[in-house]
Length: 300
Ligand code: GUN
Image 1 (cartoon, protein in one colour):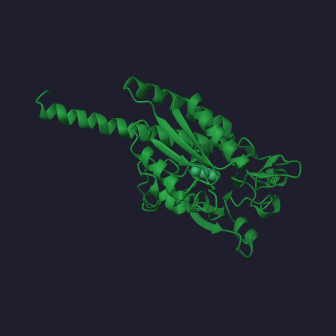
Image 2: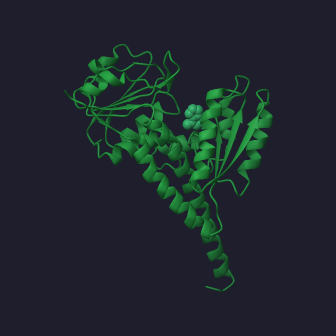
Image 3: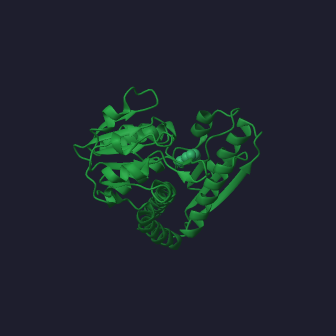
């Protein structure tokens, strides 16, 4: 009986986090501590858990973080005013506003208020456009993490058929772009797709990111396919589960990610990577600035 290999997101994360810690330490020697500012609006328990995990991961990996907990009735103007303060705070290299936001706040306006230079989620139109045109600065964390997992397990993408199920700005669309950039032939399916199996049965790689339990079962995939489960759902007993029917997919797939312990840890890890790299860019700019002033002063 076939048993797919498990793609261990915790192990891939661990290696990347060790690198973050090392590079953060060398930045500290230059007097820069990479800093992430997180804003949480309201009392959604799931968002509170995600935010707590992000702050904790910063602490454990050499980054400093701040957390603004704003009341559910904060106005859009107040939220944007706080973002503008963080945009010009030299100690902050990344800004993350946890989504979803309460309905009275326009998420698009809020995301656009974040400086594109500090948009570690990669959601700002400037960063989305940079990804589309092939020169990304910040890649959205979840699909970026998926690409790192494929790489870590040496799963080929060039010339492969990839199916992304889901078309969100956070996962589906950037995932499709990254797979395309990696040489795959990409199909994007979604809730209105007429015959999902028609597409998934010929896919070498399937990424499920719709937020619906058991959207993908073993009978819907090609033997040996790689299946990446981005879903974060709860089953009847309140246990975390993904979009993929793990038990049946495992019998057919070549590789599969578990939930928990698959994509989840990678999302936070890539947030650390994006924040670290933002701080490294700041350090380079500062170093270049001081070299230029040394040149002007005739010191170099
Ligand atoms: N809500 C769910 N996923 C994310 C994410 O990756 N970033 C932000 N800011 N909010 C989210």
